[in-house]
Image (cartoon, rainbow, N blue to C red; front, side):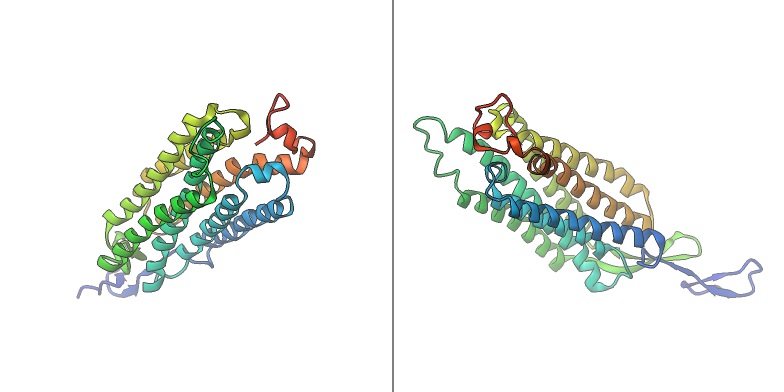
Length: 299
């Protein structure tokens, strides 16, 4: 007799044993470490938000679009926390939420950065005499950009979840004697389209920020946006071969690692310089310094 698909024969071939079940759980060291890192990391954007709220009337915080910065910090906090959905026993609802929350949170994050980048350019061009871009430099335009870019990702996710949604499955062919409980993505094309859309937003932000990097120093946040987009794209380009070569729970672990690494890259590149000025360089956190009356302008 042949053993059932969920069982494995012993060495003597006279008895069947249950196959080992594998998935990334909260109880094992790898899953616990990733979960702890996700929770601890999510507190960093919250702390930065508290710092910005306390110093919201200072020139550095106000000059870098306070409302957009707060929205970006909120989306980064959600990006860290969404990796928790990838840990645990895969069930139908869990599989649906994994990719949808990941795609929407990062789309909101990339949309905020794109809006900040465009606002940097508009703010500089609006200062030219006779410029009609002053109307476009207001908060309404940035909110429209965020809503439009996030809505496109939302539509993609809705189509994905409606036509070919992810579902849990038992993979008995990947490893001998092991049943891998994993989430089948349903539509692989939709998954890569979601990642491609995020990469497109990041690439547009990088191009605009790179072009604007030589604007006067009072608007040189574009330099930090350029660094953050290079780091973000580097993480996800490196993720593709690692993701395709991994198997089982390590595939999930690789995606979580990419989520957390790219989120950390955005936090460090976008907000660390501002936090340093606010906390340790209060003497240059002044309107005169920001408006270019000194040799170096903080950002």
